[in-house]
Length: 152
Image (cartoon, rainbow, N blue to C red; front, side):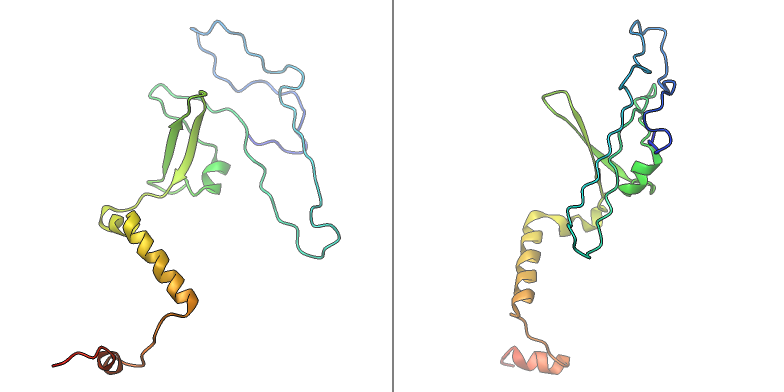
């Protein structure tokens, strides 16, 4: 759920789904449970440069469905490009009990070769050569073929 200025700090009922098996009472509604802190710092000083727009990080709760499905909030899905069919999320379980979710872009199998580490290393070298001006440009194929010094 996204906090808005008019609802910040307001006490709202919990959206948690209760379970008959749960013996733990809900702690929603306690003082400070939904506290929102907003600090604005002008790091640009008196510069006339436009201030960067920072999207507030999402914090909220989502329910886990019976089959283990978790629905991400629409604002988060859109921000990370997960609102398109076939979007994927990488999940990592850390030793401290934290589950990390990372949006990933699926690569079609026919294009996986391009993303192999050895190919990417060659791409980086080619980019460095281009940036350093270590390239030659030809006006036509004949000029290129003549530059190869091939004995016929």
